[in-house]
Structures are given as structure tokens and as C-alpha cells.
Length: 215
Image (cartoon, rainbow, N blue to C red; front, side):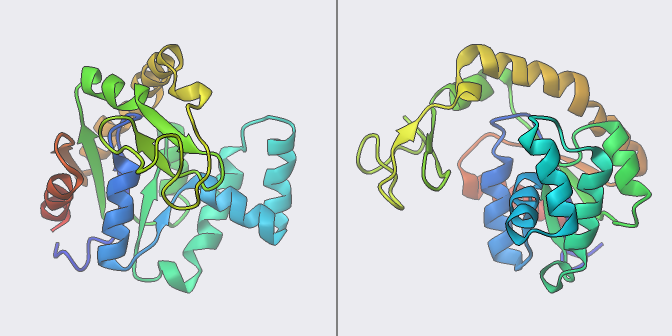
């Protein structure tokens, strides 16, 4: 498979593995969208589409949006011109059940890139994270500090530590990943489309490994 054809990609990896950062960089280089379920939900709700209203009902009640609604939103997104040349799915699927649903939905996948990072490194990355209240940009106290402490470089918004970025919550998120999402590594390996890469290093180094993996 050539690099030009491997453009329908899933990124897998535990919280803190750097999937979002690398997905954003790869999206820019290949000219294909980075698709996350969170962005899909927000866009559909803002546009007040039928699926958006359905998703909003669950979200307003504090419930998880059902897998089928998420799949339907993805299928809707895949019909848009921006996805015709490919896409990067970041954060979905999270379970084997979701992967099965994706497989029967007609959304084909070329490559699944799994990022491998030691747990101690993940903890170090996640504990130091800060998020902008305005735009959601992510910083890190040592790896990616803002120019002005406590202020977002983009819009000057206040930086804060989310509840899910605190030590106990992080350990719980990693455990959930091991139990629910890690089995996808075996699932996609059996399909012959999984590639595992070392997620340690500066983003440009990791991105080079991703390019080699999807070539």
C-alpha cells in the first residue's frame, strides 16, 4: 500500500500517548481531516441536525451517546467533501463492540496506528497538563509551557487542570483503557492493518514514524 492510499486511518493509544497532537500534524500534512467524536457531537449539535438533536438529548441528560448514533454521525461526516480523500479517526472506536459496528457500517479503514508509551511516561505527561478554558488548547508545565504562566498563547484564556487530569483520575483512565480499548490492538492485528510505533520523543520524530507506518 502506498502512502497516498493509506489515508483512512485510526489512531489508538492510551491517554497521554500524543494521538491528538500527531493527528493534527498529520492532518495538516496530508490535507485530510482529524475526526474526533467530541468534535462530531459539537458540530452536529451546533448545526441542529436530526442526529445532533438526538445526541444532544443524551448529552443533556449526562448519558453516553449510544454507539449507533455515533456511527451514524461518522457516516454522515464521511459523506462530506472534506473526508473524500481520507481521514484520521482520533478516539474512536474505544471498544471491540464499537469496532465491529464500524466494520459493518461501510466505513473502510486502511491502517490502525497504535502508539506505545510506558505508563510512567504517560503519568508524567498527563499530570502536568493544563487546558485553556476558552479554546481548549492543551499545554504542559514542562513539555509545552505557555509563554505567560497561566495564560493561553492563542487567546489569553485561563489555563486550568481538568478533573480528569488529576493523578487519581488519570490512573482510572489508564485502567479503563487497558480493560476496554487495549483489546483493539489484537482485534486490528488479526485484520492485518495494525502498526505499532514508539510514542516516545518530540512530535516531529513520532510523526516520521507514523509516515513510515502508513507507507
